[in-house]
Length: 444
Image (cartoon, rainbow, N blue to C red; front, side, top):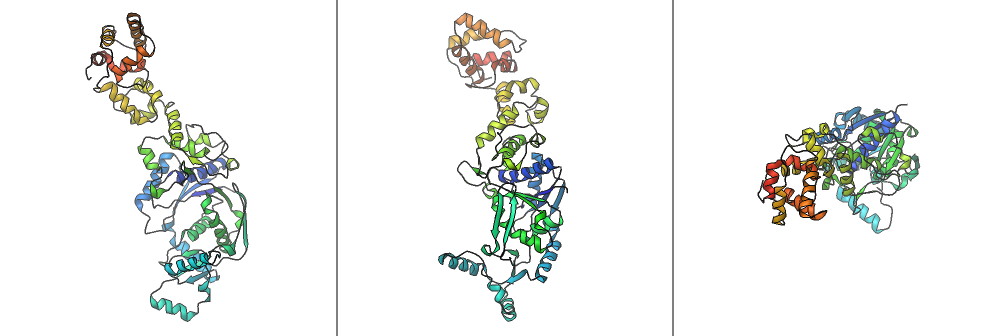
């Protein structure tokens, strides 16, 4: 049987790193097992779902290199959910409820105050036909709940191990809203059944949903044993808070705009929470061979943005000029890229060094006599990577300076910065006229 997994985001916001981790783990598992990766947009929440967010999700996944084998959109499958709902109604497993949100809130409050289990009391099952007609006459529209069986649901999770939940301790889930639209719980099960999903890989916040959905699977004629689940722990920030797309928690769009490499994001998320060391990988395919759910811990991993930047720098330091040419300032050739690359964290940072070597900069001058001697000994062009060494050797002989006392004043005069790429690389980019002007204290 071919492995089939799905990543099912709701187009109610842009993807953040928590979402991307779910997509990546599904993609890696599909590739490791020779299976299929399905992208399914869960857009049944018509009020909050937008085409702009849907387009954004597609763009984010394409930028990350997470290509899907198949695509589905829940808004195109509403007739399938309606058919499933009618089947469940005919079986007596879907029943109409008329409580308002306020009434349900009061019921929960009462259960809490009495120390009871917060589950729906199934009062709607006791309604007579006359009472139902009275509610309808008032203008109330029913929502529909799935009648859970009072039995234990078990499965062997690829990450969490043996899991068991009893139906009597879980509220009958709402499958159809008052407006007639299906909830995630119903639509997801129908899709997994009809689209042939074999493995459901998602966050541990869905564990309780799994126990509910397994009963729905069974009611719709799918053998629960034909499904395998893997619930991974959610990542949080270094403060221990879960990432949230509604709070803009490290969105893919923002990271891309900030100049992060997709390979850095994938390298971190693929190994986060596992027993393997986090290392930079050049491509997604390089992550596939070592991928194994057995390596994932039950502990909740923390995502430190500094780790992401360190990985990004390591990846940037290996990129050749052809891979970044389109993102560099116009005219930035291979010599420039190789000269500044070791000092970059992100590719866009190269623009700062291009400006420093090609646009006017106000120098920072120290000892004027030393600057005058440096200008006097500045070699004639043409210059190459050996010019810096020859110049500083002559200057050391003439002034007796060495080490930091020799190099730092020259760096400040030529770049106005204490740190940066090697001056043997920058000096030929500056050119003699600009270098001389800066040694003389002129903005050039």
